[in-house]
Length: 173
Image (cartoon, rainbow, N blue to C red; front, side):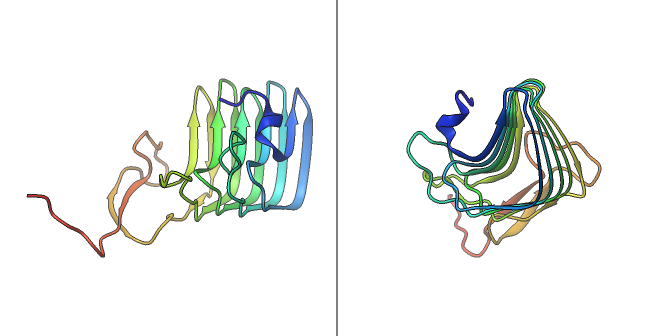
């Protein structure tokens, strides 16, 4: 799903087996992807990184994701926050892709241009995610209707919980 990382116009990209280390970096006002790591043997090591506030996505140029780790790349984060990303804040996708994160905070993920609610973290295609002390904030005010995963449990396809806006409800009879 990530052919040609240059088409995605990331603020910073590492690919082709390269290694990048970041410390105390802030990435803001991006239109496609904040940070991108793609390809086998590629490493992105980040400490105290903030990825915030994408601009409106450009046509054919990505969705305003905060962090993308794909196709065999490995990212190691310690003390990071991703806020106000569009659609999906953190994407880990493809065989061998791996995200190891300690003290990761994901908050205020925005809807995509079509109005679909955003997700904090999405992993698929054989990717692996190891999280320690992650904070996930709801994308909107509401009430937790059902909890699918508790602390220490694996999160399945239903996510962590179901959130409903209960201020205004209607019944179809």
